[in-house]
Image 1 (tube, helix red, strand yellow):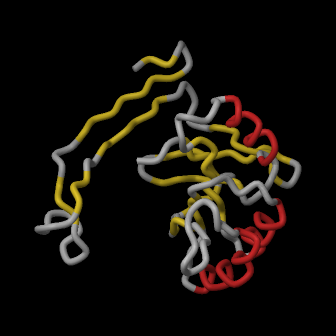
Image 2 (cartoon, rainbow, N blue to C red):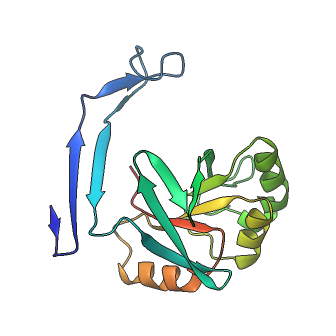
Length: 172
């Protein structure tokens, strides 16, 4: 697909594979995974993502390496959806109530990035994650039932936070 004169995107679906915990890519039983390889080609490889510490954060992909602010980074992450035992998503989602303990545990395990299912709008939560050197892939548009305008509002509200690494649009 051509996205105006500024970018071009391609995607290719791979052969579906059966997923199961014992044999994640090809076992019997479990759910079917549709693997999709997506490529986004932009006129420049450097993308300003946020204003952090008074400057523009940049990301770049060189070969297969992600470069953040000129430094290579290896992402080790988890999906973080802090809901208490017995609770339901999204009603009982509680970023603030879990961030202190969870971020310490994640940092201790070598986690340096979290992906969310809902937008973290609370700057105190982002501050805590950043104190533990954890970047955020913040979901800003998961449900096509939401108006698209909410994306711009969320990005503008958080784009200057140093924990922000990427914005997630869509789910699966």
